[in-house]
Image 1: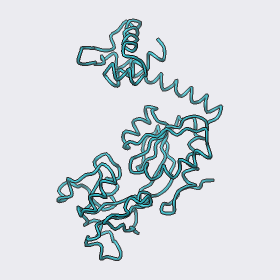
Image 2: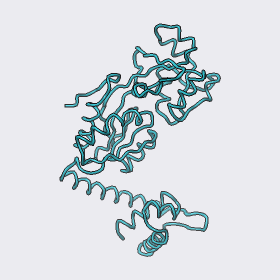
Image 3: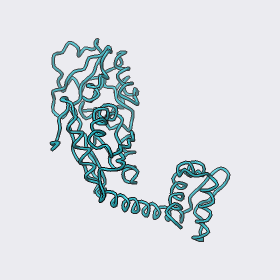
Image 4: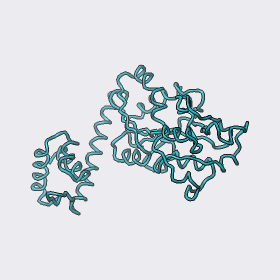
Length: 308
């Protein structure tokens, strides 16, 4: 039994498919199948019940897989500790970013990061918050840029900046005639939201003091997978939406039949944080990344710390 066999075991348990597990481990299917069979023989137990149509982990197999994951995680920690002792700013930094932030923040920092830390390789994953936290807990990424607070004793957070929301509505909307948007305007607006799973949808509801979209008229069933789609819908007159300041700066609301209005109201912003495992050994790499972010933020967001 070796670490390679444990990686094969975990991959097959996760995918429940020999072909997918082999692809994930960059080996041929016969190689992976042979090693799994040899592992079962060495342990003297059946780890998987296999038919032509399915692969199911046995109850004992599930317990062994959990131990295998812990061993692989600890091995990864040992390797990273050794690397961090040599130089924490060298090597990959696996970063997860939520979709409503990544396209607008990352272009601002990728070149400065490469210039200041040429030996740090940023490996990006763009996924929803729950997925990123799961992957962070599994040591599949090193840190995540999120817009929601994380209450988990295994994680720590570095607050980076507050990002204001702007209200975007059609040019023909009744709010066009108002010089100033007040809270009552938000509470009564026909708000378009992102689909479930996007933290921005919940934040927008909180800003507009909405508890539930169910029964909110024609807008209740209109959900989008991206900010771009939301703005397309606003542009053809289907309602209003809230846009984060970085997306506005990136020109997402330009050249459209829409108006973007600044919200000078309490709590009309989201806080961006960098979340990482307490056990992560390369804290210096995270501090270097944080420094670059803070140094390259535009004026329409509010830093929460100094770059020094």
